[in-house]
Image (cartoon, rainbow, N blue to C red; front, top):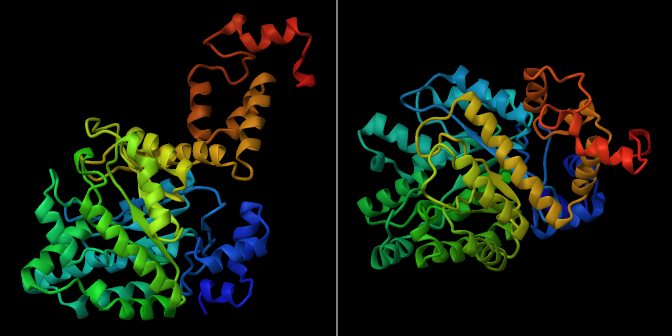
Length: 432
């Protein structure tokens, strides 16, 4: 029985109890949201020691961190270090996007070492293996793809990105209308190349019931991928993107009917003035399925700073109703991220998510900020560090300036506004 099936039957699972406790919400309210498909709890039956999280309506905005080997950097141990960095920075989930070296070994070690939900994009492995064994990515067969999907689900992966909405019809619309950056989704490009080479429909769409059967068996959440997500601002919210989204909405309905949890992935590169509309479209067309966004990135001209670009877009998207933010690191568009890039990407996305939670009134968000304000008023530096979204960096700044025991910071010193006004108003730290 999947989380969705249990919720529909009125059964509260241990995973629901854990999520409700962490979120501070009534477990029966949570169960109703899971039953309606507005919340998903990615929790593969084969993932040991998983601390489940809920993604969706009324819950804290969640953050995902990507990691994984490449052909240029196939070192699994390096990716495990990134996993640890992501966990320490507060990631709610991670995705193993490995395309180089021993892909199976990397995934299995990530699952074994991750207490948070783990996601993958199975077509990456299927395409890589097809090239290695048969000389070309397009030599992949439908059976190859579904074999990899089942293998990854059996290994304990909690959610999988599957580009089911990239159909022949969508690709034809893309070709008719044209785009500046065409297709930037790696999985979307693999599927598109395969369809055009074979002249056949996307097997993930054509054999969607086969996919549902595998996902239901392991209670793997389907993350319906946005293969036509815009890769630059000029391509945002075009016909191909929206046609794919319409198809994904229909597949959400089919997944729910089959008892399979599903969320929907979204753009991508989107200008500020189109973000809220993109969220509204997804929620309407996909019947309020949880929305998982990459950024969105709100400008194309900031390589090296794309974690900031994505945080700006992520805050606006989550405030408008997005539920799950995929981090973007400073290395985006430039190369494979380092451990430090991973840490910075997670923190930036968490800042975006928390800013949105304040706007949405998510339980606990305002209390956190109020505690920080009280600590600042009281010049309680230790408490400020403890409350910081990145305590490590906050503490490092204090230590670097030998200020750990100083009453005020080196910016204001004797002219600290908090201290002076507190004295003039007769409000001491003890009264705050």
